[in-house]
Amino acid sequence: EDCNIHDQVPHTCDDMGLVRHSPEIIQLTKDYRANMEALREATIQAGKFSWQMLWTGGASDEIGSTCPTPLVKQPTCADNLRELCQPDSPSQTRAMMYAFGPGGCHGTSVNLPELQQDLANFLLTRGQYAWLGHGWLGCSQNYIFPPELNV
Image 1: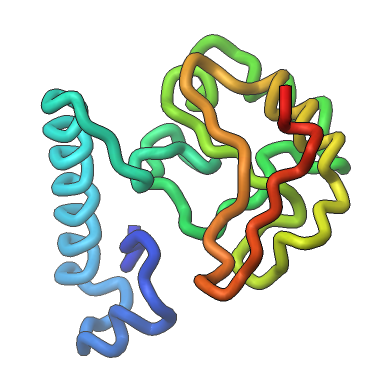
Image 2: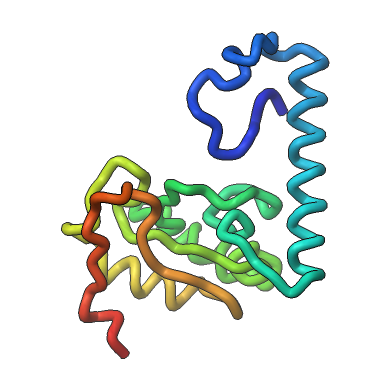
């Protein structure tokens, strides 16, 4: 892949003077991903954990996103649930973070328009280790805790 460096700011590779699709950028990306995999394994072996190790969607070896979105989408709900409930799905084999809708990093935590659906989908798709909540919305946000979660 070309300049797929986790949580980078826009134009990171351009700002570093790296040419798109060049052997250097492809190697940098490959090395970055290998280093992150080694770090993940060393962290687990030490009995530790970090948020970057959460699976928030995408490929089974993806690094967790700061700005996750719900893993089940209304237009593709049945297909999403079938995929996420498979025994070899990352939602079953990795620690999963399921985000409240609409998700992403540009919203607010005050209005959770899909709370019932998010809660149901989270309970259906979670494996042994899973978290439901907000992605990063900034330090000045009031991160609400819906009463539906008090069980």
